[in-house]
Amino acid sequence: MSLTLAEVSAEAAECTKCELARGRTQVVFGMGDPSADLMFVGEGPGAEEDRQGLPFVGRSGKLLDRLMAEEIGLSRDQCYIANVVKCRPPDNRDPKPEEVAACRPWLERQIQLIAPTVVVTLGNFSSKLLLDTKTGITKLRGQNYPLNSPVSADTVVIPTYHPAAILRGGGLQEAQMRSDLVRVRMAISR
Image (cartoon, rainbow, N blue to C red; front, side, top):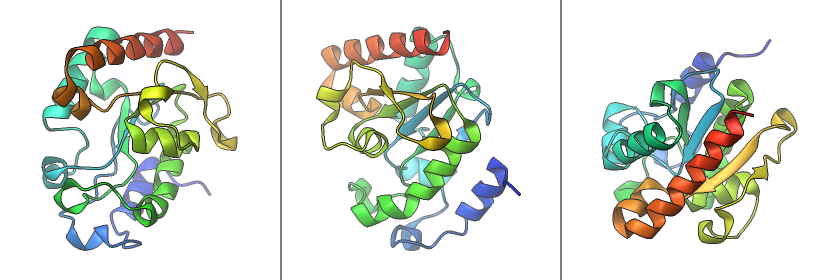
């Protein structure tokens, strides 16, 4: 018997597989349309996400919402948004390899159950994880890649910058992210 996304989310809410579980307010599993063609995957929840239990609800999320609407013509309820790790790393530090490994099965189940046409990886952690590479986002972005997964063989991965990098870095990176999102729009309309 296959579990639903809601059932997997309920299981994840009880997860204690890594040290991040000790410091969380709640698990930030994901949000959006469980049968979406488009899925965004970020790094991990920040303070506001941990408080609300929803991904990308702070400044980065507002930017992502705006760019999604302007370049793809979709709102967050028309896609699915998740993170590599489901609990906030202390002081927003990078997730440790063992934390990423502990959360990986949750993300894989999400991708399997949602079966999106396109997964947009936001930043280095999700891009390196889902593309199984050590190459950084600056070199990865600008291209489409097949998702290396037997459960979603037809899914395309489109890496782009994390919205937080746009907030820090400005114009050029935003223009590049916009072009990546145009590529997303073309990939989901095929």
